[in-house]
Image (cartoon, rainbow, N blue to C red; front, side):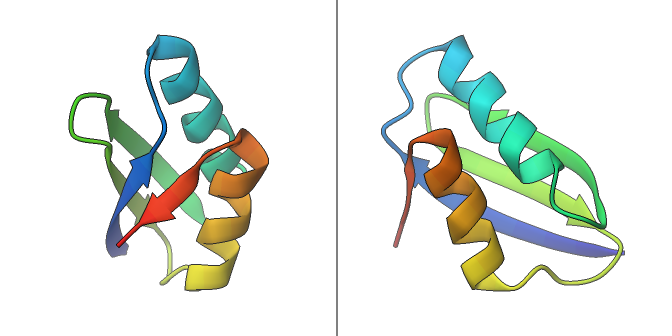
Length: 68
């Protein structure tokens, strides 16, 4: 198991959280996605490390960006 934490900017409501969870959760190998709306923190658990470009593409597809 691998754990990854990213910070997503632009989320303002629970719909935003759902969109990010859905898109990131569709990445093959992802087993869990937890999103904290206030901080923008997204904790991802997966079978193996997820490439940064794949995470960025999923977050972009949801309509948001990774900060930092």
